[in-house]
Length: 122
Ligand SMILES: [Zn+2]
Image (cartoon, rainbow, N blue to C red; front, side):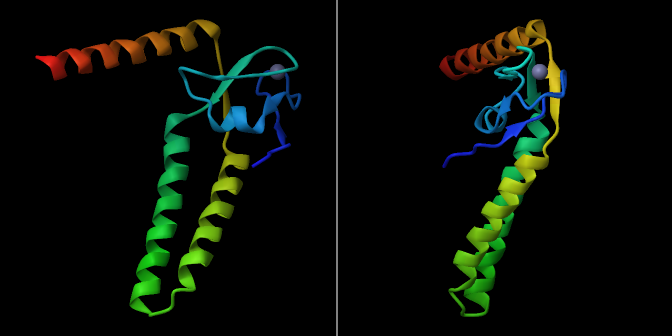
């Protein structure tokens, strides 16, 4: 799915953030602004909240489809979840992050993964 939409950079206010880059951005792998080269990301709580809302809508439509014996609720629930997802991602706030803290977040992720692997092996 092509998303030609560019998002405004929280640093220079120019539309330099790619729609997909924003969607996959996180503290450890932030999106890069094409205009100023600054890094920014969507908060993890925002992105997981968006996914949770989508799953909830799909679940509710499944329950409605079974409860009301109307399978039409399923496709309409999926469309609603998708629309909600796109809308929420468009509105999600981008936060600027420095290169240093992005790197340390990545290191922290690897550190946690390393400990988890060690714990799993022992
Ligand atoms: Zn910028």
